[in-house]
Length: 179
Image (tube, rainbow, N blue to C red; front, side):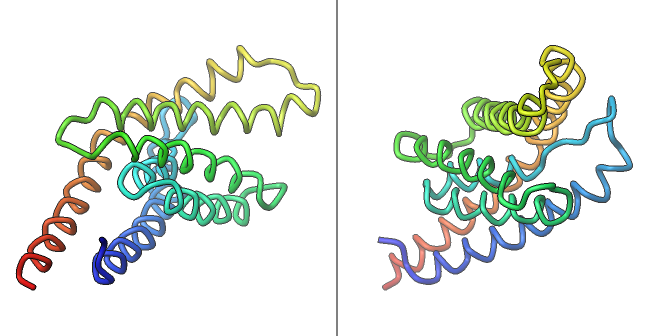
C-alpha cells in the first residue's frame, strides 16, 4: 500500500513538472523550434504519469495539462484536455502490465503514440470538421516533425522523470522497512 508521504511527493512532483514543462514548451522551446514545430512536452509528462502511477493520475495530469493549453491557446475549453486525458488513460492501462525500468523503448513508443493520438484527434476536431481535408500535408508538416522532436526531447525528459520517480519510490521503501 502506498504511504501518504509517497502520494504527496508524487502529487507535488506532477504539479511542479506540469508547471515547468508548460513553461518550457510555451517559452524556451518556442525560440528553438525546428521546422516550425516545438516538442509537446505536456504529452511527455501525461504519458509518464500514466506509466508511473496508473490511469487515474494520468487522467488527472491530462486534465490539468489540457486545461492549461485550452486556456492559453484553445478555441474551445476542454478539447485539448479531453485529448490529453485520453493519452493519460491509455498510458495508465500500460501501468498495469509494465513497471518502469532502465530501458526506454516502451515509454518512448508510448510517448510517440500519445503525441500521434493527440495530433490526430486535434486534426479531426479543428480541421476535418471545418472541411479542411489536407491530412497528408498536416501529417508531413505538423504531426511527423512534432512527433520526432517530442521523442528527441523525451529521451532526456523521460530519463530525468524516471530518476526522480525512482528516488521517491526507493525513499518510500526505505521508510516502510524502517517502520
